[in-house]
Length: 364
Image (cartoon, rainbow, N blue to C red; front, side, top):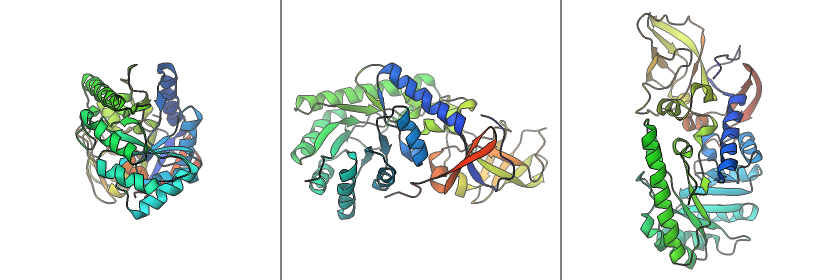
């Protein structure tokens, strides 16, 4: 990643190197074309219409979102194929919103229980186009999802509720590991779990057209086989966690917070005007501190307050002067994006555009 930062910026702010971002997008698109799998990127990582357009433009089959609100934003922005990869509990409000979405876009919804698909079926009965349901499978992350052997139970209930059962999906979150072999293992566990779930669906007359997996750490370990769709999100920007576990290099980091040195209270310590309200408060077991400073790669962001980042330098390294502008790569990029109103788009160290974070705060 270039260390050149725009001059005269009001800090703190989030900037995106558009050349790096587009290279990240194109790299995955090329891998999909070569490998014969579909890409449905998770838009919660960027929440920007302009970035979604670029992903679709190079071959993404549609977008993944986490909430009905995110789906509404991207549908208004022109998206025509959306997957809400979340086990929604559909109340009266969400029922009406899902029905309206189904009028304008091809819509898929995740589910992992009989009760949820029954409610979903009642909510979307009679829509102009059928709403598809994709059964969530637990492939080892142990968050949400049914055991592969139980996919048919939910799938049959969904069919009985009048829903079109499209297939199965999972989130291999246990692939967030520094060891490449562990990431490989998570990808194979994902493959086995999804394959078993798809076969179980097939035995009850519900052919799995969609077998969807993939996170940024495991996407690079895809192999030809049962999995025919990947849904990475963070890859578009990458972050300090991806750098630490080896999923990307420093040259692949597209987003950073721009901050100013506001205090140098000691020779080996300085404070930036960026805190948890910009960077988020996510800690990572693989990152030392609260972010990565490309200009000071051995420094540690030891603490965050709401508006302060305290940085400690190795012995003998001189702190930057007051007023110096410094880049900070967040530990987890999704939260800072959701906290920002806009992203400053830079090219060659100059601001060339400003993109609204259109789905900011669309959390319901």
